[in-house]
Length: 142
Image (cartoon, rainbow, N blue to C red; front, side, top):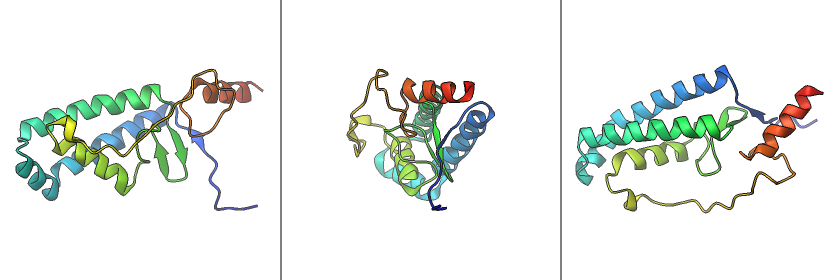
């Protein structure tokens, strides 16, 4: 058996609370980072603007974690198909871009997403549709 293959698992219950706390503290550290403060000064983003962006980001992450059924792959958590896995340098860049930019039209877009509907019969571990949840529920019921 190949031990490098990680079995994905849905993050639920207390795991969601712990993930939310890690995301909030990690994002706060990114916001307070010296390099990001310099970028905000260059972009004309005040400390209050950055705090406002951080609060909006916190609400966005809460919605992602609550409604999108995050999945754990080894050490990485996939919150949504539109976000890089956490923790990763790509995730850090995405958060920094969000916090450091006042004009949201200037945010770099690196994602093209094609989504399935909840009618999809498959249960891919990385997918946030109901099919995965129904599969997990049916599996746990036996």
